[in-house]
Amino acid sequence: MIAISKPVTGPEEIAAMSKVFDSGWLGLGATVQEFEEALKAYLGAKHVVAVNTGTSAIHLALAALKLKPGDEVIVPSITFGACVQSILQAGGTPVFAESRAEDLLLDVDDVERKLTSRTKAVMPVHYCGNPCDLERLRALGKAKGFVVVEDAAHALGSDYKGGKIGGTGKLVCFSFDPIKNITTGEGGAVATDDDALAEDMRRMRILGIDKETWRRYNNTRGYLYEITSDGFRYHMPNFCAAVGLVQMKKLPGFVARRREIAKRYDAAFKGLPGLMTLTVDYATVAPHIYIVRVDAARREAHMEALKAKGVATGVHYIANHIQPYFKPFVRTPLPVADRLWQEIMTIPLHCGMTDADVETVIGAVKGLFARQAA
Ligand SMILES: Cc1ncc(COP(=O)(O)O)c(C=O)c1O
Image (cartoon, rainbow, N blue to C red; front, side, top):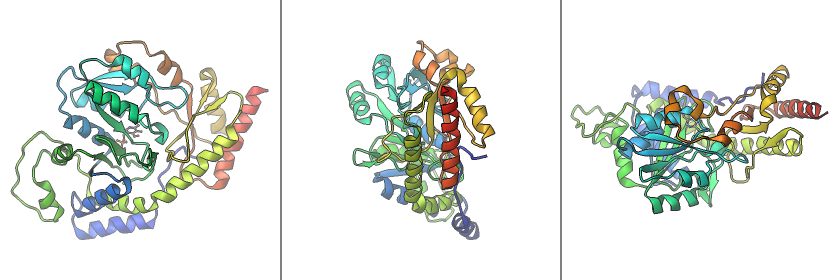
């Protein structure tokens, strides 16, 4: 079975991790700082705060905004549940917005309709690595007084207006979970151009303990510390950062391979009856997953047929407004999301795929849709 996603690691990652284990300092320390510096340089970011998951990154970013009860955060319904849980954990009220059918990106027109005096943040998700319209959102945020908190879990390596996603922006959240564009095993980071937010997040990622940087980055265990705010146990450990440092060196190659596969899919699937590709510019996007849209009534059958051909498929993601726990927050109908999530089907895209795997996927998809049309 060709998997939808898969981590690509080798002996280099194990050797790097092994060195950390030999050092005896597994937790937050100098290797994490080195990883943050590598990310900063790659993204062109002012600050990077590394944490233990992408979900922690999103929660930490929102927690740094110090939301008050009733404060609203607009989020696309079609995204990973981590976004919505993080809003709730940060004390905010999620407000679900529609996504655009052509690329699954947050519909900014719908955001405008859903803005209220209580809107404190809007969370665009750079779906499949494809950047949302940040220029418009940031201008809107300035005018209306909300912060743009980017979910860039899919978008490490994507370009935006000549720079990298994460190179600019107040709060840009990445994930390095096992299947992301790079992995640290599990991990995440928030990039920010805001000095005060960076300082807050550094303290809050480790239980609100102040002055952690100079004490801990020296790999010496200071016994004196001060707790000056609320905080979480979200820091990235050194052994994960060691994996991340190796993966960062591989990232340009990973991005190139992902682009190559996505472009081959786009070319092969163009014009297939019953299948729609998303509108993505692979010259600038580092594709994380490859999603096609199909007839909702036939999606399950398509998934079964592809499985029979050895091609795994998935759904990224079920709309959150239909999740039982999130239903109380649904204020308006979301007809686009209702339809769209039932049409989406993810097919394999990862750097462990051989050219033969890519051809197998293309052959299976083309065969299926040509047959469906007949
Ligand atoms: C869009 C999106 N947001 C957030 C996350 C959360 O990241 P993590 O799995 O590292 O907690 C993911 C991970 O799958 C994701 O795809």
